[in-house]
Amino acid sequence: EVRGAATGVAEGPLRIAAFRSAAAHLLPVALARLTARHPGVRPEVAIVREVGRGTAGEVADGRADLGIATLGGTTPLPGDLLTGDLFEERYSLAYPAGHRSPRDLPLIDWDENCGSYTARWWKQQDWLPRATITAQDDSVVLSMVAGRMGMAIAPQLTLAGAPAGIEVEDLGPRPPTRRVGYVTTPAMAGSLAVRTLIRELRAAAAPLRAA
Image 1: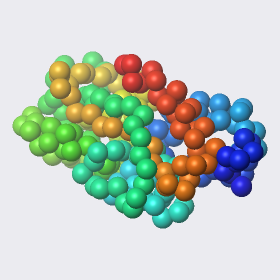
Image 2 (image 1 turned 90 degrees about the horizontal axis):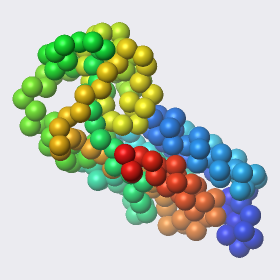
Image 3 (image 1 turned 180 degrees about the vertical axis):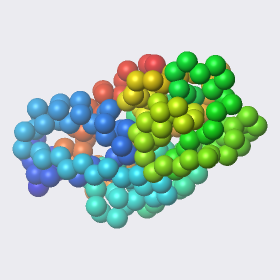
């Protein structure tokens, strides 16, 4: 039983749904600290595309105890989930290193949930062409950019794992952003393991909030 609130000791499986870049760059530190405090907890991480109901849908449907999700998006969160912000990440322009006119390159894109502000920003950019290539994974998009196939608009966590051969350009004083946070159910919010994980996720996200 993963709750452990009464005994002060958590143990058992803890199911986490996260989109790829959050799983790669937030979860390792947070889970290392969690399991150091509660060695009996066994994290089970599912990588879920942040499209449609995304990670929040996994929590609402009972397949995950906590999800790392895009908040404030154009797709409403399902159910009566509890949410909290971890950080807000900026989008930037990623392009092949050394290219002199990156905004003239073809656009490579992937489907993902984004905030309403980002959706409005995107529609207002006359210079952005329609995507010529669409992938299902942001790491594939970056590999294509590094392969000099085009440019991409990518968020901070995605760019943290950018391969060699990519340069990044700021998108101005009011760039598109997305809110990244956690979602859980009222029942699981009382779980000691979930509460500890949320605390460690906030600690792991602190450098991103300061950036």
